[in-house]
Length: 236
Image (cartoon, rainbow, N blue to C red):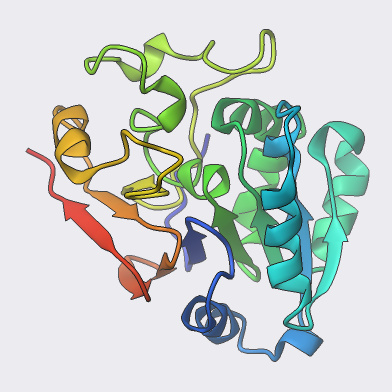
């Protein structure tokens, strides 16, 4: 995927617009009120999950309840031409959570990766969990490979996701590694001491954020927005 060097506006979250501070950060990035802002929400990463998706409903509710116009775009279900037309008409491309490797595959397969350099000259990229992870430099710290050896190399886990629909490539929108759900009861291995060990050998800094935290990024300037807990791990 591409490495973008132009003016970039990103909101990388662990749990979406989970509090007022994160919601306000999105308004600052768009420069618009929610009622004047159009969002394209991409739920594609949730597709492989056959369990209760109340978390996805909550993510959408947290956006809609603040007054945003929301269009839902599932990447496998739309042509490249219609995808481009739909994204041209919004202010924010909001990529939801779920299976990170499945999401990466469809970002490429749909043509979205090729569209983003031009689209993000005028739009904000926002992510939730998997949608935030794919924006960075590596998926090595994804919870979906927590049962694998710590020394997993990037080129060895293209097949972690669903068979035939999996990729470990990232968008390289920012020179960091994003790790969501810090200290979550649902992700027992997303803890600072474990992440420090897993991050050995990475070339980029790691930001691990809990569900009440986010990163507001404009170009190379990174601001942590938090009503919870987060940690920073420097590369060694």
